[in-house]
Image 1: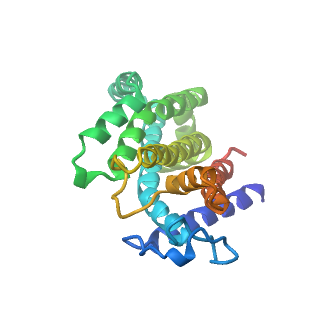
Image 2 (image 1 turned 45 degrees about the vertical axis):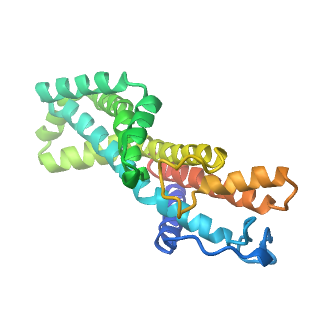
Length: 274
């Protein structure tokens, strides 16, 4: 029952993220001087920014920026980790050796430096979170692959598979059910959840740096017509310091970040071992 509760919570967080992303407008609405810095009570549901724009648009556009890249990064890490675990159990020597070489080579690269180089090399029209998330997922995959392979090794590797074959189980049931679903699932889910959360925090960090530059630098993750969740944090911090009543912007930004952490951790707990 506890796993079902966590799974339901993770599904609710994912549904909310996708709903916000699906309803996000392509451009920011116009400024409204008469609705500047209104609270949620005066301008439901989340209030307005210093220019009179609804903060709901910030939440929607920020979700649209991170939704698909975040899911893609989790799928990539989960897939590569699964391949590494299955290769260890299948006793395919050349594949296992090749995956270990990939882990050592990619795992030695500095993640943040490589991501920043990729972001700076992208043409201006291609500056979205997708290539950055893909790069981060590839760089983070070696740790997940190593843990999945180690978990498969602790099961007994090829000996575990042969024992199940001796009991009459088919290859599909052995590798997909007994190895992947029952034994590798907690590792794969935890590693994928961590990378998904890292991608969202990476986007917020890059967008916050762009906002903090005073608008002189374009964001690496989205166009100038959209707003990231980092803009909520920047609005709340800088304009509260200037004396404007924008605590609700900071609260919404922190709330969205908290929901991200809650959703990823709920996914991890839902997939934990019995």
